Length: 235
Image (cartoon, rainbow, N blue to C red; front, side):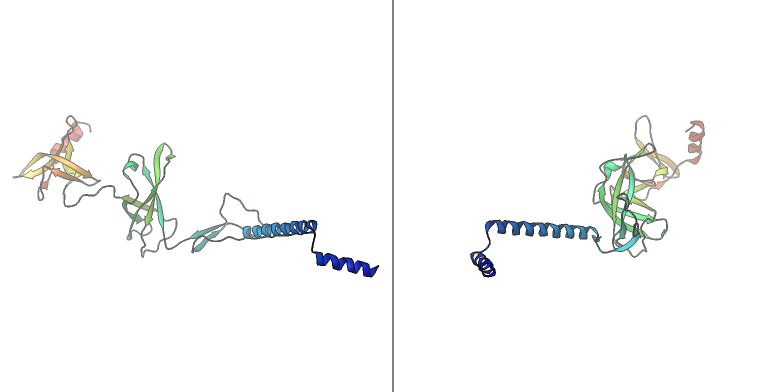
């Protein structure tokens, strides 16, 4: 009987596995492969891989505690690159486009003047107590200043530029409310004259004068007249 069993086993080996045996073995291999892939997936879920080289700024998870999707596990800081998010009023945001130059000053480092450019503009507005603004991200150029994340900063975005033009101080310019024309006070031959001017770009201090004045003209106003207008006109 033992010899017959051995002979049967030998014949089976010589004849090779049956189709059913192959199918069962393949199912076992597939199950093992699925278990391996699940184990690899579970292992990958336990690892946190940084998307870039940097410094860990904060760790918000502790061993044994349940994690929350609302809070990042780690905060990674890239000290090589900084950006600044600024709120731009809805009146001015239409003049801002990507690529425009910007200058940035920091409250903590008032002596440092940083340069940068507009990287992107938020497509939707932010409403803060009735004030509508848009978040504009500025990409800062590399600087020697000891920057730190979270510093308070003020930015000026250059939306237009004029070179080699005549500038007049805003205090010397008045506008006729009836006609809308602009006049600049100029001192000529000891007298103050109101000269019709065509204005261009303007900031908080100066206005570009495209016509009406020339380089070297002396801006002036009659303080007595201006005081009379202020008090008598109630404006």
